[in-house]
Length: 276
Image (tube, rainbow, N blue to C red):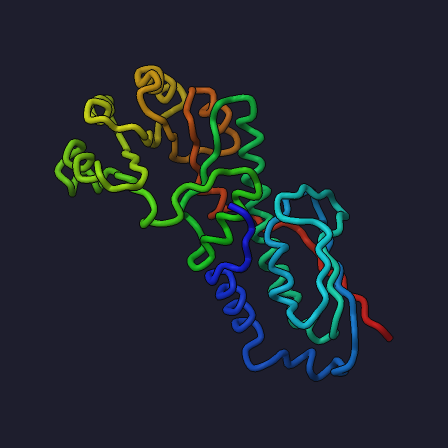
């Protein structure tokens, strides 16, 4: 997914973030800083990271000149310059925190996604993100995960069918659930919890299986039994420490909600200089 900041959801997220912080006006800047004062802000990485979200800066600093030095997906080391923003000093001060909130958070997601991707290098397995995102920021957070090398799973409940245990129970069983989704016109994946459910799903023509909360040893055994008859995703508490072991089971995908719900904001600084 490219980092397309023209999408209406992105524009709305930035508008809401600015409105949340500025409200009726930046009291401190308006009182302390002359209206005609000019300045320059330099966004600098303070640690090794994978950048994401920098393309939002022209939206945040709409009254300034923004020059992006690096772009989403780029790796930066401590001291690496991300962007230079020039314009009214008040505008720089007013937009500083919103800009950092977005870029630090999104770069944290991209950096964690990249760490998962590195753990499975050399295997056939790929890393998926999930719907465990900050409400209202899913599109941005999924773009950040993709910037780190993860594969975007479904965007929401509307673009793919993922039949989980509660759906199976409500539908009346695996066969009934698969029959009802057979002509859905979207990708269909089904969760199986036992070997009996696994065999039933395969017998009913399932082509994409979700195996949840298995140990690496169990997953390897089940995948050997599947023997290429379906694509396999593993999920459930997969960490950076265990990702390699799960990837080596022969799984096609590992999914991790931690990429979006537990990413640490990266250390990024916005250094301001003002014309005298």
